[in-house]
Structures are given as C-alpha cells and as structure tokens.
Image (tube, rainbow, N blue to C red; front, top):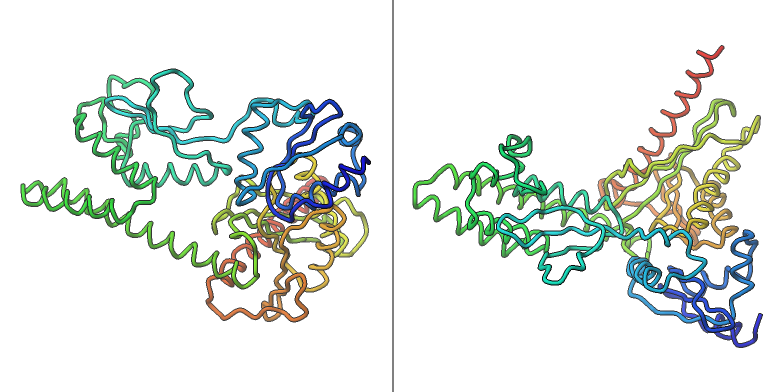
Length: 412
C-alpha cells in the first residue's frame, strides 16, 4: 500500500460519512458509505476479500471522504454521488435505483403518490417529501395520511367514484363531491401533517369545526372532530414511541436512535430440523417484509451457540457483501454465552453493530462491554420493546421449525 494512502486511512475519523476511492489517474472507481469511516475503510485492507473486492483494492491509489451527521444521511449522499459519478465498481447501485419520495402534484385536484425521482421538466411545481431510506416508513406515512384526510391517487379522474371513495379514503373530486377550493384546503392540511406541524394543524381544524357548527353544518363539523381525534391519538402514540426508543438509547448508551432492531432466535428438537429466525422492527413496530428464515446447515450438532453463529454470520455477511444498511441494534434471545457467540461473528466480519441479549430467567439484559446485567424496571418502555422483539423472534423461529417437522412427517 502506498505510504500516503496508509497515512490517510490512519487519520480517518471514527464517524459516519461517505468514502471515495480513486485510481492512479485520479478517476473515481468506488463510492461507499459507513457508520464509521475509520473501521469501514480499514477493513478493506485487513480482512479476507472476495475476488471482485480484491480487484477493486488493487486499483485504489487515493481516497477522499465526506462526513455526515448520521449513517442515514451517508446512505442518501452515497446514492446521489453514485448516480452522478457512476463509478465502475458500484455495480449494485448502477441500475439507477433511487430512494422513494412522496409527491404532491400541482393541479386543481393534486395527486398524492409515491415516486422514485423528482420530475425534471421545467415548470414542475410538485411538492416532495423525502427521500425515505426505508420504504416501511413511507408506506406508514401514506397510510396514516390517507386514513385521516383522504386524497386523490388516480392519474386521471375516472367517470365514477372508485373503491377509495366508498371506503372514505378519497373525497371524490371525480364525482364533484368536493370543490377545488375545499380540496386545496385539504392539501394544505396534509402538508402540515407531513411536516409534523401538528399544533398548527389542530388549531386550523378546530377553527374550521367551530365555523361549521355555527353554520349548523353538523355533519361536516363531526367529520373534522373525528380528524382532530385521530390526529391527537397519532401524535400521542408518536410521542410515546420515541419515548420508548429514546429510553432504550439512553440505557444502552447508543450513538443512534435504535429505529431498526433485528432479533434472532433458534428452534430445534435435539438438534433435528434446526431453524433460525430473524425478525425486524422499524420504529418500534414489526416489519414483516424484512423477516428472514434460516434452515440451519449444521447437522447432528446439538449446539445452540454454533447454530446462532451460523445464522448471524449468514445474515450480516450478505448485508455486507451487498453493501446494504445495517440495523441500529441486534437483539439475541439468550444469555451471556449467546451474546458472546454473536459478538464473535460480528468481529470476524469487521462489523460494529450494537448488540444485546435477553436471558429467559429474570429477563436480564446483557450488553457488550458490561460485566453486570442490566435490570430494567417492570413495565418500562425499553423492556416492553425488547420483549416484543424477543417474543416475535421466538414465535417466528418456532413456526418455521414446526413447519419443517410437519413436512418431514408427511414425507415419510
């Protein structure tokens, strides 16, 4: 390795950001993101590499980096730079994929819909929210917005109302059920909601409700009353959720809010039909689209630690190879031994992901670097969240184990 490059790597900060590799001619050949620039870049030169990565490393002559406030921001910046620079070795991101956005069009009856990129046409005055690095959060935002307010999503207004109108999820501009002025006022409310300006929005709706009541239009007043009620419940649950997550972050001394938590468990009967399961929680709620099942490859070995090491290795080796986002926290169903087994795998892969385990007895929490278990107060938000992840991982692992056993019995 060139001495100047070696010195640059040694001086890299232990902070999130984007790293840019260049060849001897100064051409950008690879762009990546990292939770820790120092650890991520160093790993290219200190571990076993695939043939493709070895070819990349052989051509690295120089590097630059850009610091970001968080790993999420680094992921967004990485995507933007890859699209504009098109480095040769970024084959995964060169298929022109992009992070989704929420778009509100600029027309008499604006459409609210998901899109992949901003329209480049001159004069486009659409309003955009995002980008969203996680499609789950986007779907949730769209679902809640539609349930509280309702909006148009069809590209062209149909001749008669669709199912969304009958389900009260669209105000029905196609059937002249709402005027342009009323719909534009609705869009204003949606923008306040998506901008998290709840206080301003509730005040606006309250005034609107009073006006309808004074006009003795009690049906419309009742609709707005229901909107205010739904908004109040949503705001309260959101505050409670972030108080759960912030409590967990504080207890575990995490750098980032644990928005993405992945939980693991093993299920087997005397080593037979051994299975592993990983569940994923996003912002305190199960994200079933990102659940994963593992059929343990170890045969005739009754060793929970070895089985756990296998599935954790398979999960994070793949994420690392595909350069995908890592979770904010990993939760293992087990005690100190299970924690040590998973930690050994992460170190082998050169990954630094916060890791905890929860023991079945007394439900003590074990964390890396702590000699004594963490004893959380019964009913605390952090313990409740950890339990939910643990129980869901256990349920998912057992369900897959039972499925394999039934298949084996039927096969006989």
